[in-house]
Amino acid sequence: MHTKVAANAQAMKRWLGKAETALGNHSDRLNAINIFPVADGDTGTNLYLTVRAAAQAVHGDANTNVDSRQPDAAQTDVGAVLAAAGQAALEQARGNSGTLFSVFLCAAAEPLAGHTRLTSTLLAAALNRAQIRAWSALSDPVPGTMLSVMEAAARAAAAVDAGQNGDDSNHALGLSLDAAVEGALAAVIRTEGQLDALQAAHVVDAGGVGMLLILDCLRSAVLGEELQSELLDGLHGYDVQDPHIHTSMPDDDGVEVMCTISLSPLNAATLRQRLDEIGESVIMSQVGSAAEADGNYRWRVHVHVPDAEPAVRLIRSLGEPTQITVSELALPRESKADPVNSSGHEL
Image 1 (tube, rainbow, N blue to C red):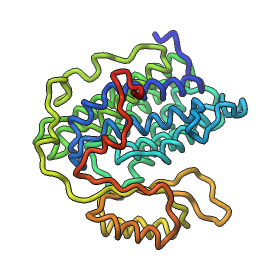
Image 2: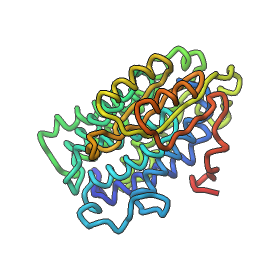
Image 3: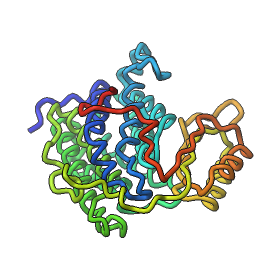
Image 4: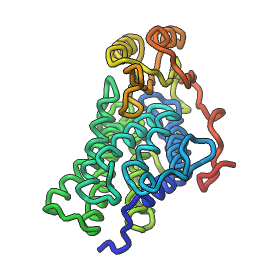
């Protein structure tokens, strides 16, 4: 029986802090097995930096726009804490994996708004909303990725919650968290057989493993238990001695373009359609739920294209983007990432 449950806003902050450290510890191995959708060996780095942005936001880091001296209601509202973290993560997201996690976090916050405590039913609702939003953010979602892991975790938590008959006890929450992690692990193992690239390389999906780690950090933070040290044992390609498989693969041509931009709903739909025509891995997600004074909404945009210029020109034709980044897909982006030591902290 779970006896140390603390499912409040402070636990959500602990979750993100634990996730930052865990992803720092595991970033090298996640990078080592990263071959889908691009074999660029940066999924671990991208997830770490994105989660770090979320964690810093809710701890009032000086480099973020979120002040830890916010009103008490915002400090105790579980949904408000995660919404602030999600928005910061989305604004600073790195790569496919970081962008999808940011979408997941923003969406998970919505059913939790106004609540000061997480329950089994709220967890199930949050995970379900998050996985649906993540799937819909991608123009061409693919099973066998972190999307499948999100979905499996949500389904497992919902199944347990359905059998609790509305029980809002800590024990019921613990059972749902256990089920979510177990479901996520089973989904990670299945990824190898769902994608030809993973099956050929005999590895599981890197983003899926990262999402599994994040969910185990949530379980640990809420239940007051250690991370499950044996959780990743036996995952193909994940042993320390296993090679960085992407280094022997051909370089991927093209670049990754990311930005934030304010668009009307019509222009957002137009941008997604036209990016689909010229690129791949198109992800578009709304930043926040409120319209701006002119009726536009802010969007985070991600796309892989052969050449940046046409994509940037297209984006600028519909609005004025900010935070534009262009990264070569053929090169690991370690030069742009802060190095981390084995504890997941900056050097």
